[in-house]
Image (cartoon, rainbow, N blue to C red; front, side, top):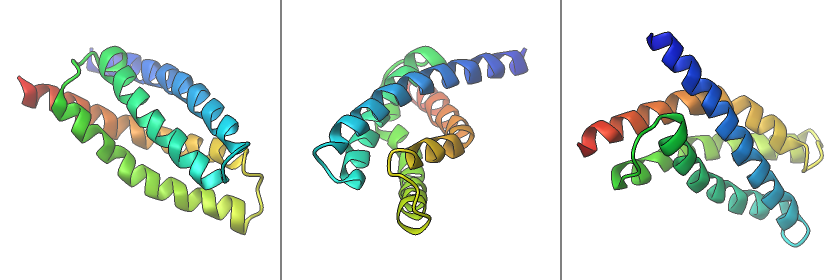
Length: 130
């Protein structure tokens, strides 16, 4: 039963991630017309964290929204953000990839790691809040 639950959660995580990706990439592309790519990425990324917390708490892992989760959840993204910014820089500045293509690769690399860390934090914060 636990494997089925994990598989369902992962499927929901991917769907929530796809929704989050569409929203944040749309924001990144729109901001890219008026801001440098790294600033546009940072703004879209922060927006994505908030949207991700909501979707993962309420729909993916079925945990209530709470202050512990809200304050803990971004820790996943502090680590991920650092790695993603480095990878984005590497792809754009060193390897010469287009600044609109590079974030797609960055996202694909980070999905499985983010699932595990998100699940741990949200399930733990739900237990701590009770």
